[in-house]
Image 1 (tube, chains in turn blue, purple):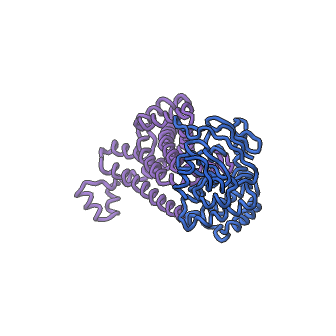
Image 2 (image 1 turned 120 degrees about the vertical axis):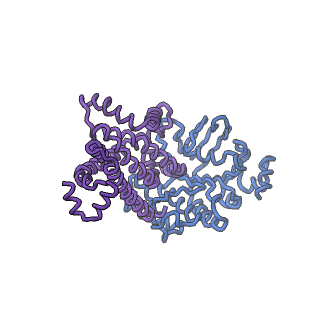
Image 3 (image 1 turned 90 degrees about the horizontal axis):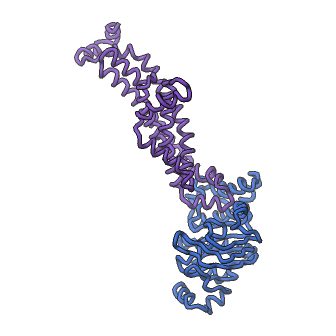
Length: 240
Length: 240
């Protein structure tokens, strides 16, 4: 579903991703962990070209998205993204946040979009908030709206960039719950997170990144219980 | 004729007039011309702010082009207009630019063109700053949903930026009304033109210039009152 070949990314002279190769299968939940500055967020942002890559290839469903001829907007419409800072549109209500892209990008008529949005709001447990503005929501509610907004485009893949890092501890659970539900439904997901419990419980595969490389990848049980590399052990000893 | 006015308006004015030498009768005589001038001031200001807004939006967007070669002309334009006195600009437009296009010059046209070109540069800066003040995550969220750059600008960035631009745009409009007084030197029959004519005809100082000051103050004060009203309404319109 996603194939990454020798991905490199530099910001000026600072090489953040040094040589990343990875294949993600349909319906797989891949959790990316690693110390801050290891390049995991940058890696995720490369997957929908929010960062222009320096070298290498990324294929999504066989399409080379790094090819200049590829319509990146079409790819992005099929790859949902959830941000650490939610990035809801503050001038629009919850409902308007969700229906905007389906109406403008997919040219969906308003009625259909609203119907779909209400279904999604029910799914994330926020039906009663559809006419609220983002500012009146708690962090956890905002993030659930952001997930619903991404899902409204009916993406084939969902990318999560530290979705719970900006949340108060008591709100982390409600967001993870929605993500678990999504994983259960068979969504292909790439999740950058510090929630090791989530990685263990939901992840099909855990990737440990450090210094711009994938140091180690394995099933959650293997990686957490039996890490092979020193750096992995060191990191896990700090976070577990 | 002046004496008639004084007797009509009663003893108080007469006393003031005789003790200070202030000639209300002359103001009365010039009143119709001041009123006509006020209409000119309002007219050229409205025309100019309208053209300035459109030009300013394009120049502001031009300044934001990533390609330095392409954004250079826009930045140079803003730098030139901001770095030279408006007085000089009026004379260049009046005696230089307009004759090239019309064969002869025309004070009102030159006044509107000079004011538009001048305010466009300041408005461009307001647009640029307004757009840049919107969090980068807003653009990223919109793009990640598959919107084009133009769609993201139109539906997400600009609506939020416009609201932040209203106070500085209001200030610019007020500045423009005041600066329009300089078009008197190219014989645009606006407020200051008649004040100077008044001064020339009767060799009076306080009457014409105080009168002009009062009219300008009424114009700008009314405008700033309306603007603060508009700001409050927009602030309660939605909570962001």
